[in-house]
Image (cartoon, rainbow, N blue to C red):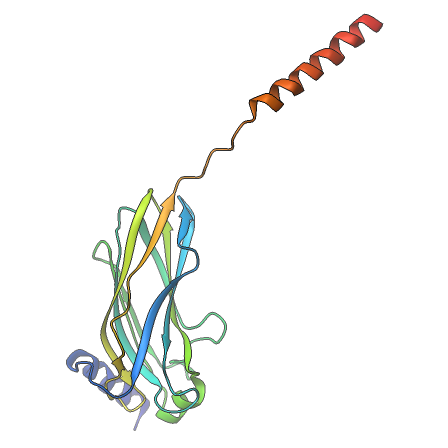
Length: 204
Protein backbone atom coordinates (compact mmCIF):
# COMPACT_ATOMS: atom_id res chain seq x y z
CA UNK A 1 0.00 0.00 0.00
CA UNK A 2 1.25 3.49 -0.83
CA UNK A 3 2.51 5.20 2.34
CA UNK A 4 0.37 8.30 1.85
CA UNK A 5 -2.73 6.17 1.23
CA UNK A 6 -1.98 4.13 4.33
CA UNK A 7 -1.58 7.31 6.39
CA UNK A 8 -4.93 8.65 5.22
CA UNK A 9 -6.58 5.32 6.07
CA UNK A 10 -5.11 5.35 9.56
CA UNK A 11 -6.34 8.88 10.19
CA UNK A 12 -9.84 7.82 9.21
CA UNK A 13 -9.66 4.75 11.43
CA UNK A 14 -8.52 6.77 14.43
CA UNK A 15 -11.62 8.90 14.07
CA UNK A 16 -14.01 5.97 13.94
CA UNK A 17 -12.74 2.93 15.84
CA UNK A 18 -13.12 2.07 19.49
CA UNK A 19 -10.46 0.27 21.47
CA UNK A 20 -11.12 -3.44 21.10
CA UNK A 21 -9.12 -6.29 22.55
CA UNK A 22 -6.11 -7.47 20.56
CA UNK A 23 -3.43 -7.64 23.22
CA UNK A 24 -3.20 -5.65 26.42
CA UNK A 25 -0.90 -2.66 26.39
CA UNK A 26 -0.36 0.05 28.98
CA UNK A 27 0.25 3.79 28.66
CA UNK A 28 1.56 5.76 31.61
CA UNK A 29 2.62 9.28 32.48
CA UNK A 30 6.03 9.61 34.12
CA UNK A 31 7.01 13.11 35.35
CA UNK A 32 10.73 13.81 35.40
CA UNK A 33 10.15 15.16 38.91
CA UNK A 34 6.77 15.30 40.70
CA UNK A 35 7.83 18.51 42.49
CA UNK A 36 8.93 21.56 40.50
CA UNK A 37 9.82 25.13 41.44
CA UNK A 38 7.77 28.05 40.17
CA UNK A 39 9.19 29.26 36.86
CA UNK A 40 10.99 25.99 36.17
CA UNK A 41 10.20 23.46 33.41
CA UNK A 42 8.43 20.17 34.01
CA UNK A 43 8.88 17.26 31.59
CA UNK A 44 6.39 14.39 31.49
CA UNK A 45 7.06 11.22 29.49
CA UNK A 46 4.18 9.42 27.81
CA UNK A 47 5.28 5.77 27.82
CA UNK A 48 3.72 2.76 26.10
CA UNK A 49 4.55 -0.83 27.05
CA UNK A 50 3.30 -4.32 26.29
CA UNK A 51 4.24 -4.31 22.60
CA UNK A 52 5.93 -7.14 20.74
CA UNK A 53 9.60 -6.22 21.35
CA UNK A 54 10.76 -5.88 17.72
CA UNK A 55 7.83 -8.01 16.61
CA UNK A 56 4.08 -7.66 16.23
CA UNK A 57 2.17 -5.99 17.71
CA UNK A 58 3.66 -2.56 17.26
CA UNK A 59 1.93 0.81 17.25
CA UNK A 60 1.20 2.79 14.09
CA UNK A 61 -1.08 5.57 15.38
CA UNK A 62 -2.33 7.17 18.58
CA UNK A 63 -4.68 9.96 19.59
CA UNK A 64 -4.32 11.15 23.20
CA UNK A 65 -5.72 13.90 25.40
CA UNK A 66 -3.95 15.23 28.49
CA UNK A 67 -5.74 17.44 31.02
CA UNK A 68 -4.22 19.51 33.84
CA UNK A 69 -4.85 22.60 35.98
CA UNK A 70 -3.89 25.57 33.82
CA UNK A 71 -3.70 27.78 36.92
CA UNK A 72 -0.68 25.77 38.09
CA UNK A 73 0.98 24.59 34.87
CA UNK A 74 1.38 26.19 31.46
CA UNK A 75 1.82 23.94 28.43
CA UNK A 76 4.87 24.80 26.33
CA UNK A 77 5.68 22.15 23.72
CA UNK A 78 5.35 18.47 22.93
CA UNK A 79 8.28 16.50 21.55
CA UNK A 80 7.22 13.38 19.66
CA UNK A 81 9.35 10.29 20.12
CA UNK A 82 11.75 8.77 22.63
CA UNK A 83 14.58 11.04 23.78
CA UNK A 84 17.12 8.23 23.27
CA UNK A 85 15.59 6.05 20.53
CA UNK A 86 13.98 8.76 18.42
CA UNK A 87 10.47 8.73 16.99
CA UNK A 88 9.71 5.04 16.48
CA UNK A 89 6.49 5.78 14.58
CA UNK A 90 8.40 7.90 12.09
CA UNK A 91 11.51 6.06 10.94
CA UNK A 92 10.82 7.06 7.32
CA UNK A 93 9.93 10.72 7.94
CA UNK A 94 6.38 10.49 6.57
CA UNK A 95 4.39 10.61 9.83
CA UNK A 96 1.47 12.98 10.38
CA UNK A 97 1.68 14.75 13.76
CA UNK A 98 -0.71 17.15 15.41
CA UNK A 99 -0.83 19.05 18.71
CA UNK A 100 -3.77 21.18 19.86
CA UNK A 101 -3.55 23.28 23.05
CA UNK A 102 -6.22 25.87 22.26
CA UNK A 103 -8.44 24.73 25.17
CA UNK A 104 -7.11 25.84 28.58
CA UNK A 105 -5.96 22.87 30.62
CA UNK A 106 -6.18 20.39 27.72
CA UNK A 107 -3.59 19.22 25.21
CA UNK A 108 -4.55 16.76 22.49
CA UNK A 109 -1.81 15.18 20.42
CA UNK A 110 -1.81 12.50 17.76
CA UNK A 111 0.57 10.80 15.40
CA UNK A 112 -0.08 8.59 12.40
CA UNK A 113 2.91 6.67 11.04
CA UNK A 114 3.83 6.58 7.39
CA UNK A 115 5.93 3.45 7.89
CA UNK A 116 5.08 -0.02 6.62
CA UNK A 117 4.08 -2.71 9.12
CA UNK A 118 7.41 -4.55 8.88
CA UNK A 119 9.29 -1.29 9.48
CA UNK A 120 7.31 -0.61 12.66
CA UNK A 121 7.78 -4.16 13.94
CA UNK A 122 11.52 -3.99 13.35
CA UNK A 123 11.92 -0.58 15.02
CA UNK A 124 9.87 -0.80 18.20
CA UNK A 125 10.88 -2.47 21.49
CA UNK A 126 8.37 -3.64 24.07
CA UNK A 127 8.47 -0.27 25.88
CA UNK A 128 9.36 3.24 24.73
CA UNK A 129 8.37 6.90 24.98
CA UNK A 130 5.70 8.12 22.56
CA UNK A 131 6.34 11.75 23.40
CA UNK A 132 7.50 14.22 26.04
CA UNK A 133 5.13 16.94 27.25
CA UNK A 134 6.87 20.13 28.39
CA UNK A 135 5.20 22.38 30.97
CA UNK A 136 6.21 25.38 33.05
CA UNK A 137 5.16 25.78 36.67
CA UNK A 138 3.42 29.15 36.98
CA UNK A 139 1.85 29.16 40.47
CA UNK A 140 1.99 27.05 43.64
CA UNK A 141 -0.32 24.10 44.06
CA UNK A 142 -0.89 20.46 43.12
CA UNK A 143 -2.55 19.26 39.94
CA UNK A 144 -3.50 15.89 38.53
CA UNK A 145 -2.36 14.96 35.04
CA UNK A 146 -5.06 12.85 33.39
CA UNK A 147 -4.51 11.02 30.12
CA UNK A 148 -7.39 9.86 27.92
CA UNK A 149 -6.74 7.44 25.05
CA UNK A 150 -9.01 8.32 22.13
CA UNK A 151 -7.43 5.97 19.59
CA UNK A 152 -4.63 3.41 19.42
CA UNK A 153 -3.80 1.29 16.36
CA UNK A 154 -1.35 -1.52 15.67
CA UNK A 155 0.84 -1.99 12.60
CA UNK A 156 -2.11 -3.38 10.63
CA UNK A 157 -4.45 -0.53 11.63
CA UNK A 158 -6.35 -2.76 14.06
CA UNK A 159 -7.34 -1.41 17.45
CA UNK A 160 -5.01 -2.05 20.35
CA UNK A 161 -6.44 -2.66 23.81
CA UNK A 162 -5.22 -1.23 27.07
CA UNK A 163 -5.09 -3.49 30.12
CA UNK A 164 -6.54 -0.56 32.08
CA UNK A 165 -7.05 3.17 31.57
CA UNK A 166 -3.94 5.30 32.19
CA UNK A 167 -3.60 6.28 35.83
CA UNK A 168 -3.56 9.95 36.72
CA UNK A 169 -0.43 11.33 38.38
CA UNK A 170 -0.02 14.35 40.64
CA UNK A 171 2.64 17.03 40.37
CA UNK A 172 3.25 19.95 42.69
CA UNK A 173 4.61 23.43 41.99
CA UNK A 174 6.32 25.18 44.86
CA UNK A 175 7.89 28.54 45.59
CA UNK A 176 11.67 28.62 45.82
CA UNK A 177 12.45 28.29 49.55
CA UNK A 178 14.19 31.29 51.09
CA UNK A 179 17.62 30.47 52.53
CA UNK A 180 17.55 30.17 56.31
CA UNK A 181 19.71 32.58 58.27
CA UNK A 182 21.53 31.26 61.33
CA UNK A 183 21.47 34.38 63.45
CA UNK A 184 23.72 32.88 66.14
CA UNK A 185 26.54 32.26 63.65
CA UNK A 186 25.93 35.62 61.98
CA UNK A 187 26.14 37.40 65.34
CA UNK A 188 29.36 35.57 66.23
CA UNK A 189 30.90 36.60 62.91
CA UNK A 190 30.03 40.25 63.48
CA UNK A 191 31.49 40.11 67.01
CA UNK A 192 34.78 38.67 65.72
CA UNK A 193 35.00 41.32 62.98
CA UNK A 194 34.39 44.13 65.50
CA UNK A 195 36.95 42.65 67.87
CA UNK A 196 39.63 42.58 65.17
CA UNK A 197 38.78 46.16 64.16
CA UNK A 198 39.07 47.42 67.75
CA UNK A 199 42.35 45.52 68.27
CA UNK A 200 43.88 47.09 65.15
CA UNK A 201 42.81 50.58 66.26
CA UNK A 202 44.45 50.03 69.64
CA UNK A 203 47.68 48.75 68.06
CA UNK A 204 47.84 51.80 65.83
